[in-house]
Image 1 (cartoon, rainbow, N blue to C red):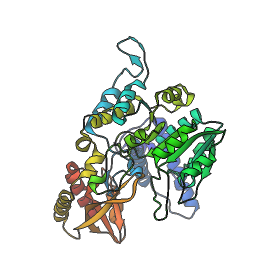
Image 2 (image 1 turned 180 degrees about the vertical axis):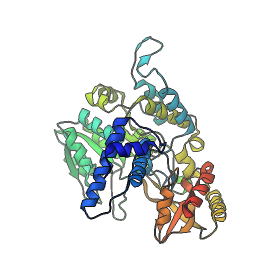
Image 3 (image 1 turned 60 degrees about the horizontal axis):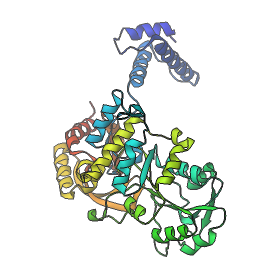
Length: 444
């Protein structure tokens, strides 16, 4: 095996991107050690050129950002693995403006003294949802942890057995409850929970009734759960809180698009929930956030809790969320927020785009009608009609080649083919997708 110095000298002759000498040395040592281990396992020894090529690949991989844009051709609108909701142009502009320099994040310009970062969102959240007040932390699991830790620690929280759910990534409601110091009290059965179950469970140690939206599954058939307005009335008669974890953060009705009703934040507020919790990067269509709206006195307690600082949002996320909320306030969400643009997109327009793309690709490419999910723990079992380009891919080589393009293209595999579902592809990216698909079909 060559020495580290010899490998670095040979690498330098190639005129490839440079990194600090200490980094190059570490990479070279790692490559040589890996090659030596392969020899020990009866593998062949790479020559100097091969090692230099591997070092070049390692340097380019290290220099390339690990987090980068992709084209989502899966058809899943709120794709958790692909970053959930894409942001509106206004949100991206505001995040860039705030991120490129200093801002009044915690400074009151009018008074000339320290301010609070919560003030940038509280009035907007109140106006959009109808609640008295609102704050935002870094995600909805954090929001629930903050609420329980602040308001119910050391006491009992009553929840329907059907709603002690896992919310994704292995995080479960009972685990969050335990971490907060609250005691979980399950009532009812998997499929049926009555108002009387909550009332019978309420005792001297009870602090709240908790409703959790079953965001990624649905129980059908012989089912029952009390209406939120009845649950709040029963709780308030006993001086208990009602905490409503809505999950997806829907602010617009989805029925006009042929989808089943999704609980709205405004409905939760109107029904009397003391606090309503929801995500910022799902149906709301903004950056990652956990939003809490409701009673002003309770929000005041949350702001003062030590966890509020640990879970707070950064300045760029606050700017992006504020811009997103303004879209709702101005009545332009359907036109400006990408998630809603995709939900509202015409099936006819998507079909015409898919037909054009298939025609340009030729070969085995064809057009198919399909259905796609909203995703992101929103509207389980609900789908939208869509259209896709279907290309034969019996060995899954094409799907891999598409992921290796710049930007990578993520597709849906189905029965020996790949589907490029255009509901989740920005029409402005159709040409980029066409070039990537051609390159993937015929590498080189």
